[in-house]
Image (cartoon, rainbow, N blue to C red; front, side, top):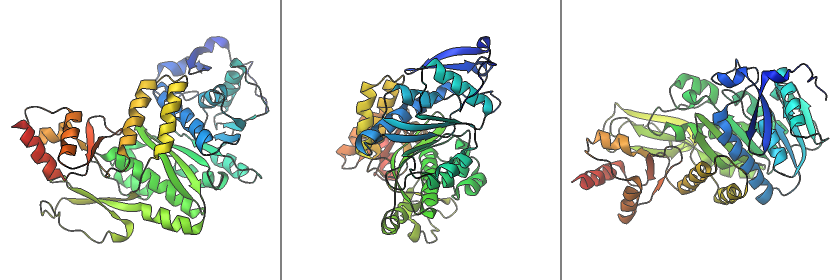
Length: 407
């Protein structure tokens, strides 16, 4: 598919390098806050999203699906993600590069030429993502990887994506930037968009990620699919999910349906626990402070693991080997995500907890984690909040430990 690029005047652009890819961006877009008003959307702060996406697709190709890949970049904007995939020697048989904005598609074509990429592997299109997915779903070969990266909620694209993706061992990469909705600032919108009740708490980022996973999984179930989250991370006001598809009614019923549950939280004392979807009942009194006015529930949400260790290990190794701009930040984020595996849902912000206890000083987080472990509990850092910790120690015991340290 050919697009006219002669009308794009050279002096309207700036040249940028991201990873191994060069790209043109509109000068006007480079001086405003990223928004829908841009000629072609580009957010420099989302580079870590693209870095990890590149590493995640490489990891998937290395340890899960070693075949040559068909990839769908359904909301490509400037095309930077696709450019980086093509420049980093990933085993690609075909890549669909699409955007609903015709100006963006012309810019993508210009950026492909800039990088010397001209190949019959590339299918460049100017379509609504749902239309693209519907067309792809009719083909004999379904794509291995689909990326959905919208401005706002991905909810209206997930169903058609599951109809288009490979039914077993397909990789879905889904971003949500409507974090105010998922984090409980707009709870009614969350119920409407994701069919789940959020909670606006110190650990709302993790709850929001788990609500997004629940929604994706439920839409998968409707399409006779299940998902295994490989990596779920938060950064810079967005959540990104990398999930593997699987099929089979027995496996879906055994795995998926047992992965849904609710979070119970007491707004007065901070007590929190999770229950499966089928054991919610009707809790009335906090078992810790015996209060019945501040007990709150959130969900349904995903209550099982949100990362897989072999996948994260492979990303860490690839991060060392590839040209990545956020190398140290990614290493820290993925290492903290590794520590989250096997830990309880929710976390405690140390600064906020010490403030509530009116302590005169705040202990070092790593020292506190070691002390918790010495007392026979588990504890870890969390990538959701670098000032927080996860632990199976009950909150009243954690408070007592902090008071003891103060003395």
